[in-house]
Length: 144
Length: 458
Image (cartoon, rainbow over all chains, first blue to last red; front, top):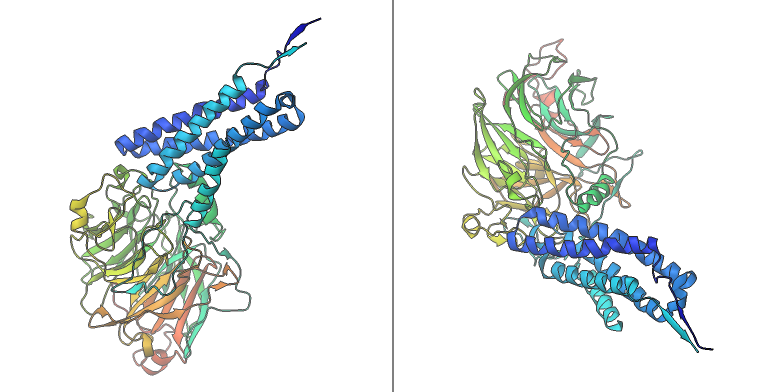
């Protein structure tokens, strides 16, 4: 007899989802304040970026730790392929985010620059990709 | 996604590698310092020698000189002043409570704190008296209390001026006093918002009519915005009677000590230049200060070398930036300057300027951490700096960090404040009684103090 099982368990558990919400919100916000700084040279905008990136990095680190645990011990075991992809994305996001924090610790105009802008764009894109993977379509298993 | 890994790894390696070391062959002292390319590394080079006690050891002086501690257990001594009767005043305190604006400020503050004394600033002046002229302190007592990070000191016609971090106050002084009560009379407020660089260096004009106060910038290179740099990175000229002030020189990032030379009676300053452009940028300097001159900060350094970190750029200001007279080396953090008079310490230290160097944090190979002597001829620097007091660093630890230097004309000795070992050092030619015993004909019997030949202004 054919049966269809819909795996209703989300890829990311609620706590993980909450942690991931921070990088998803903060990296793009930092990208916006970076762009504003580059347009205005008004120093407060790069100060905003610094704190936004610091906050995003903190939560990106927690997301990474949580994803590692999930892959080896948790639910993501059932979705190994997607889990590996997810892990690579958030590891890259975290690494680039930390680089970006150092970049934004430079003084004045050098706190953003081309490198800072590129890093902010990459971190924003990676955060969104991570969100699509984590919050996206749930696993559906079909067994014959 | 492998592509991303390919992107991250080389990027990390490239960024770590872009921090260059120091080139020991670069000559960064004198009137033509060699300036390397800018290197604003992602992680600035940092080396913070942590404090350690002296044990039984002393700082090192050249052959023919002696060094001794004439005051200990002070509370962050910064600058000293010799009074006409030979008493020494020591300004003690720690100012600058700049709010932390970025995550970096929190982390950098924590890192730099490791290189400092854990003692809390005294916010006071201490008086040191040598009653029998043997070069040792017989009386160490609190002279004035309740100050606010006092730094610059000057005595003019029986009035003592103290530059706190936020105002300039005066006290009536009678010779021989060992204590002054009260909080003094405010001559004028001094720029005190944020006070990123809080030290208010001070000296009096030779005729005693004007006071000059150094007011450091509120940032490294304008990263707190230029709005907070109003009246910063300047030297004020203050009318002693009325307290009226005007900007005497500007664009002078952090003028940490001021003195008039005895030959041309020109104002000189030692100035701390900007950080995070590499281990060998930008050299700190000693310069005569011209009325109305602009020294470049933050738009350029050492004349017209543009600093790209400050936007919008100001080519109009860069064009009029003055080149300082004499480079002292990068990141040495010169915090003290005083001139010789009347033969100085003799030998190679007869005519010139003493410079106290607090020492670097922004380079892997520490610089400064010593007192040097810049020889002068005809009222101008002539020749390489000569080490006078060294040995502050040992095995990666700082046993002391020199701040203010004061030449005592009457005794022919030099005092050096040290804000890590909380000591005042006295450097004298060996057999330093040279003036106390031989030239001391005016001393009355029964008067234990040396004659007061020091001028009333400094």
